[in-house]
Amino acid sequence: MRSIATVLGLKIDVQGEICARPVLVVSNHISWVDVIAISVASHGIFVAKSDVMSWPIIGRLAAMSGTRFIARETVSSLRKVLDETTRLLKQGTRVVIFPEGTSTSGSQVMRFSSAVFQAPITAGAMVQAVTLQYRRNGELDRLAPFINDDTFVPHLLRLLQAEGIRVSLTFEKPIPAFGHKRQGLAEYTQGQIVKRLKYSDQAVSHGINENINRVA
Image (tube, rainbow, N blue to C red; front, side, top):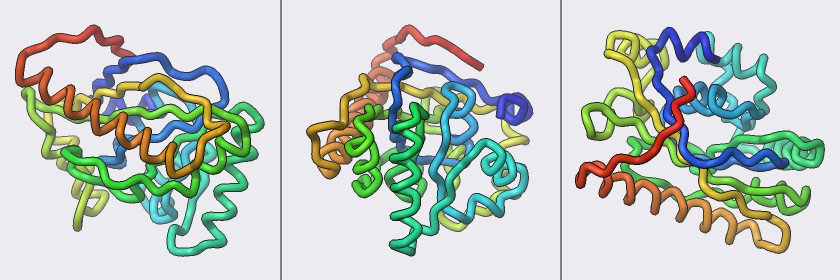
């Protein structure tokens, strides 16, 4: 993943502390580049939709890194992933998911699906939200989002022709899942990301500088 990040000219800025305990990391979803950025910043096993397997290079790397694939339209697949996520968390693994279920332009956060939040509750693990943002010249990066009718190869070529990609990852304070309901965890972490996006927009518009630990 670091090699792919280098080829893409990906610059990754990390803020906040990455939870060292067994944790379910939940993030907003903008692009297939998200997986690379989070992998470089924080090792973990991803839960991703099954069509990622067909993507050139990324699909193979995802499978090699242990990604669990889910066919979202089937209840049995969701149950299997939920059981596997619970098992991984009990073993002390960091698991990463994108609860929106689809990618966006980065200007909004869609409603988080709550089903997989049952895993950290059952496992007695932590939950940590991470906010992804792509910016170019002080504004939202219009090239990075992988949305609507985009296909992988043309999108990859556009990124390769651009002068590098900058993505910031902000890790929020982790919270214990035990004692909470899964819907409450979904709404709380979604709210954390929404709040962070609004704060970042205000910071950019007012020229506020933040301390950033760059990892790539």
